[in-house]
Length: 70
Image 1 (cartoon, rainbow, N blue to C red):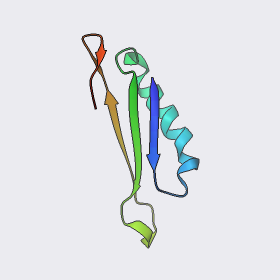
Image 2: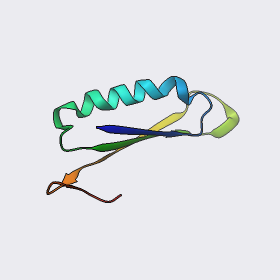
Image 3: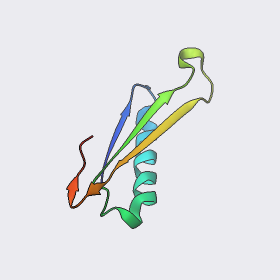
Image 4: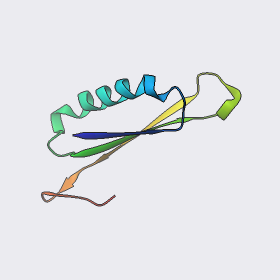
């Protein structure tokens, strides 16, 4: 499974490996159905600071042996 990581956060490099490793672990039982997944990290309140990050995950499954567009 290929995991694409997207973020504008300057500290995202520190979290990229953790997010990718966690997604691979969670989807491991069905990774043959999911050739591609995305993880998008965003800061909820912007530059105000604090612990307020959001990680959105999206798995793109195969349908009838073909990857769905998206």
